[in-house]
Length: 121
Image 1 (cartoon, rainbow, N blue to C red):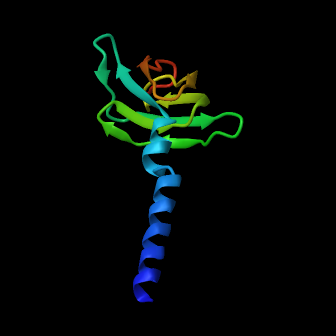
Image 2 (cartoon, helix red, strand yellow; image 1 turned 30 degrees about the vertical axis):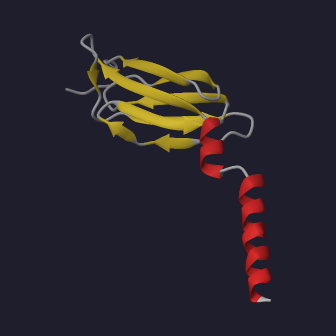
């Protein structure tokens, strides 16, 4: 009798895994990636103090993005429209809207300009 119940449980587990998608892999394939490069000056030096905020539109999430390395920010996002805000203490802030599509990477090179009107020497 125990053998029949063990077989039934094994069959139920097998049916569950066959009919359910693998959630992590399935979700990742439906996301796109946004890469933001925060650059300073004419020589495009990566900004050490940049801040990136991604604001979702029409129900998409909003999030502050941590740098993956100096001047580079990466985030996976669900498809949709996003406003991308980039700022750094000594420069003028920048904002641009992007459409993120599944399985695609968008790269935004934010070339930050010095804020000469508000900098104190």
